Image 1: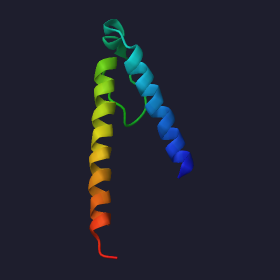
Image 2: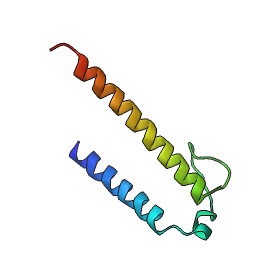
Image 3: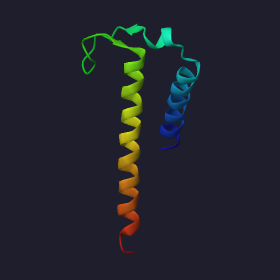
Image 4: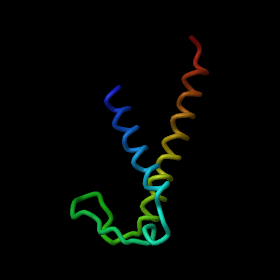
Length: 76
């Protein structure tokens, strides 16, 4: 579990760095998707990629909060 949290923290720091240093020109740059299953088949801008990451992060947060509330409300 500690390794998972450490890796997650690294990824979050990486995204923070991209957002903090992003200039309009960089956000408009097209990203070519990898040629592997599970990835989109068309190009997206850096900004579109960041939107996906932030939306996924928000959804994970919502589920975690919901699940924690359910666990806390269970009788002991």
